[in-house]
Figure: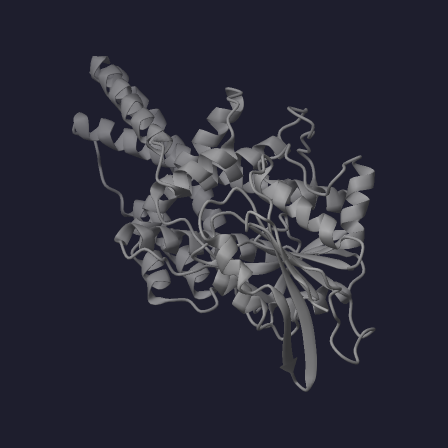
Length: 475
């Protein structure tokens, strides 16, 4: 008998039943346990669970693990607790939904994932992690299962993510969403074209082999698969799975829509945390219990992204400074060749936008207008610089908490890069004005050619990415 039990404080609900497999097909497929870590997800948890319960292949069990929440997430999720059935193509699938509120949890999402793991690790072959704001396409679970079962070498496979349309109606939310959609699309396409090797089995929606997770625990002497030593727990786990000889892949068919950041503060908090965590994994040596692995194959794309960002910062900052300096002594001469780099950038952005499944007019406009994409790139450069600065100054901060504060609209750290940029520009302008004209001319005669060459190389790489075949993939 199904027995719904509640904790006395009304913050824990679960079912004391054994999950059922769909009738007549006990041996036809592997068993999948879905775990949803949820932190203040009252706006999205119902949609997430509804999408899961409408899958053409239901997970065998679903555990919602609520942590550190002070909103209505538990009460909304509790409405879904219990048995559910769905018939697809004459086959009836069954699942059970369990809802847990583990209260204050110092390990945050990591703690919620590990709690869910302990509930399902002994009875299921695969672990499906789904974020509390990630809505799965109706065939996502079926596609993930088919792809992971097709190759026993695969230890985990990630869905293709796109950022959902913004809940906010302001121009800032729409602009940031378009930028994040382009960013995710470019990242996904890079992974698809690299043999579908996925650098990060993202927590948004990934299917992981339970055997691989248990082997990670043994090989790394961990009590749990996820550890709190890294700012990017999913990246670290992906590296550990890869170290054991498993493949980490991205699906070409399974899709999911994730919640984006719709304010400057929240985007800064998220991106700085991601960048900082990636740097921690990339940098040689050991800063906590996690050793850096600079030559790990999963980090090649990370190094490429960081090098590209350094070049973007240098070329843009140099161009602005050289342009202002030339204008200040009436020495600037416009050459049409400078129109080539932005034209190639527009073509590349447009190519990425057209590869997005379900692309919108806003995605196309974001690429064609050039200015929005350029502004978003400047935002990403500021996140990049903030993360590296925090890393090298050994600033010990809780980046999870910082992101949470930013999502609540608190904090002003996101303004620091702009302030520093203005200070540097002011200082360099003052120094420039103190230089004699012959020295100014000499600086310009050296600076412009160096910038020409760097920009030409950068443009060549952009053109190569623009012209490469996408092999029929859509992101």
